[in-house]
Length: 206
Length: 206
Image (cartoon, rainbow over all chains, first blue to last red; front, side, top):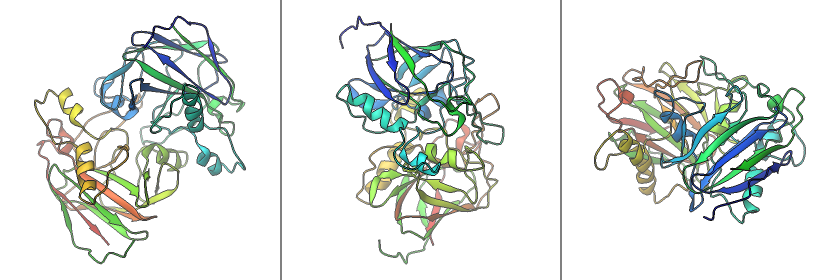
């Protein structure tokens, strides 16, 4: 993979998806521009899309004996349990989610939305398509800034992000990867803030 | 799918996998014969294996606003958020897992095991192969009786099952499905009891 010199900011438009190639050793800075936006995040091995960042393969290997939310210092693993990204920095309080599927057209039917609603699953395909790629499946995303705490009885809550404008996470690619992002279009539940107003986010390859 | 009249008990041999077709409306009884065995459980739409029981699509829809462990009365959903199974009965204390990936050859390398170790991922493929089928991917399993509690900080524990010999769960098929099971061969961590001795389990289509 060629070394990319473009370190300019790229916008992930509100309600849409974007993907980018990140060479091994380069860093990806994902910015919560307005502080309230959840960004579903995926990473695929650029040389074999069937190898992808896997939350279920990451959870058992972070923390002392496993943790459901990755944090700074953690290695994010693919579905062969190999390091694919390292979580280097996080200026937010570290509230992210790994247990809720990407929203999809079926999710919005559940919420009684009539007609087509933008959704993170279709955004994954659209973002990858801009690079001429098709993901072979839809892995559980790392939902950056999504605030769905799990209580001691296993119940899941739905709350607005606790991040602030300009918060960012910094991730290092441990292999050549294609990363994909969706600025989550959820506007019925307060996933993207109590105002239920999806906005844009930004990323930068460093 | 033809109505199956064979309601005899089928063994899932220790460390191995088995699969079975279950017609819509029929029930599958999964029995923890010795009480200490974890059984990784999958369900695929018999008419389209790309539709399968999905833990990440089930978790947001069980309980009042989501729960990480399904229990009696819950609908288990596929990756199109359609009902695929209903959880009808559970004689055990209801401790199961949906957040830890099926063990695989890479898991045992992590645990410093030399050479090939039986694993749930390969057991899924082997069980399905007996029916002439190949799963298109490896979904997060519903790990029956696996005891990996998540604490309030998101840390995951690894403990022996709390089930007793003869405990069973009863699941109703909400579409024609192929169900697959692996009697988990984990013998390094106490997943299958403090003795770390994987044993067989049984199922019955009713």
